[in-house]
Image 1 (cartoon, rainbow, N blue to C red):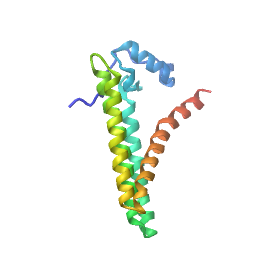
Image 2 (cartoon, rainbow, N blue to C red):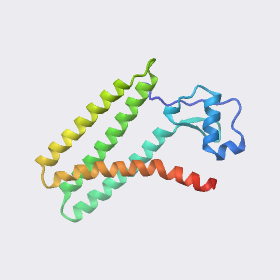
Image 3 (cartoon, rainbow, N blue to C red):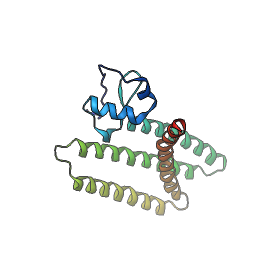
Length: 175
């Protein structure tokens, strides 16, 4: 199964200043090998291209698992274990949505003739299914079912923070 992650060694590793500047490293990577910018590849110090999007999803997954465990512990202490369980289910649905989005974008980008229509249809189907299922669970499992929405929102916050904070840190180091 093709995961879309490519690892390539370059004959000429990046210069020292390219290691410090991700934009230069990305540009050199794009010029040096067949690189798909949608995949988010970036050079490391030893000249290996890594899938940054997959790495960030791994970090988001670890943080989401930690938040889920802490939520279950706090909910159990407050005698609201069912609410904590629904929050964890929401975290899982947020993770599933992010994974399916990444797979869809990779599939459309890898097509010979990428079409927006396939991306639109896939996104609409996925969002309708997740939202409809969440609304049904939230309504049928009142009052604790609302936790599913808190979990999905929490995962989106985690994903944004995992994506944005390294970029902010890099910008601060450059200035």
